[in-house]
Length: 483
Image (cartoon, rainbow, N blue to C red; front, side):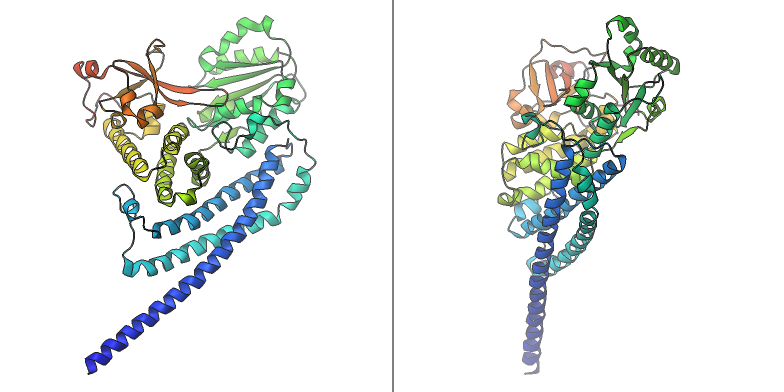
């Protein structure tokens, strides 16, 4: 009898505790929903201001700094909202996705799921509180910015600049764009010294894209008679064309390696003889190049994870609503984390293109597994991350994307481009490995859809001949490569 009473009491207490937990979870979830709606409302206001600022000429440096703060807070806020919205998808019967060996998390057991959700809600609640506090502060201090923004001239917007997706336009860089516009449109300081602006940033962060985007501006084009692009290796070739350089010139110089100070002085002396108002932009990944500037450099960093997630989600889902494909969301988040660790914008569009054309869970998981294997394979061969590997000109082992061994060698002065070979894009190869031509071919890993229309191409040798010549099998150390 005592055992029966004890068992009934235990069951009653257990159910009562579950009732309290469920009641708390429901009320907590309702409060979270209210906070998310409030945050979304604030985000809409901030996004409207940022978008309006993108279409104005902001000549006030303090306003540019405030624009930077607005855009950072905006992307952080969107990430918090997405975290709340999409985490609930993990509870909607997607164990085949979350329990996959590819993803680092799993569905909790049924008996612990309520407790896990409660803990998760507490964490999300803290994130929401922090995002709301930040966004409310931003909006409270935004009024003066909005008033001053109304006094800034509007840019002439072309239909080209109003695409829905970020495939054909430059994403982000709101403040950096205004800084570069200010430099180009302001008058030079009194004297004969031409203004020199260094733009410093790592590989593939968008330095040349930023310059090309701003140079398309109507006011910039009307201010300069022509734009001259030079490489550091050919810096002094400009001296041969002095007679043809008439009017205000904008000279864009890319330094891939360190430049001798004497060469720079010779170049700078020549630029002084150009028409008053001519300017120089230096593009470089080297911090030392900043010493040549006459104004404060623009430093381009990698996109924050919040910015990259916003961009990748938009590209990967396209016109589809992520909420209509809940099982794809956690996979997309894993892609974003991986791409952010690689610190390269080059691969975002090709990866998103392939995924967007096939919104299938198994397909996305299959490609995610291939990409992870590819990264691990290259790390085991060369001993460095993929970003460093590409910067230093090592071949890429892309065997995991092909049916046979595939070694892609970057084109360079030592390996000149072979235009007569057939060309295949990496996106096509990933989607269908059978498109690989027989023998040698050119592999285009990335093509820009906006000026300056850069691309990254590799030479792929005949894999049969490559193996006969003694190329090591993928996955084995190649001792001849050192960092």
